[in-house]
Image (cartoon, rainbow, N blue to C red; front, side):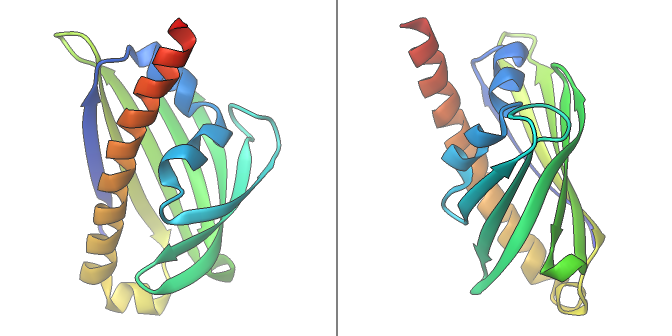
Length: 154
């Protein structure tokens, strides 16, 4: 299946964005519209930080294990996602790039490594659903970054 990429520009620096995204518990704040029941394990941040969540998309619910497998501060974080009893394997990659005018361009790419037959048969619908959910994630991430930066300044 083709990957899905969404992006947003925010006023925070790449270091601020990376510092926020590096903490797995922060992800609940901007993804809880479709990822619920967050349970954390491993370190709080960096490679090895892990969460198990329940994903509810397209009328389906499934448990997903999200584990950070690569971290390159302040440029990139790669998560490994396993769901559908191991039949679905994907990577979620946050790319963090400075903007010439200040601020940061954040992109998130969801790449399927292995997908159940139903996902493959319904690939256009699955990709559209993921793109829509992750566009919402990016808007909510921008809001949470602003709140986090504001709280850090006070």
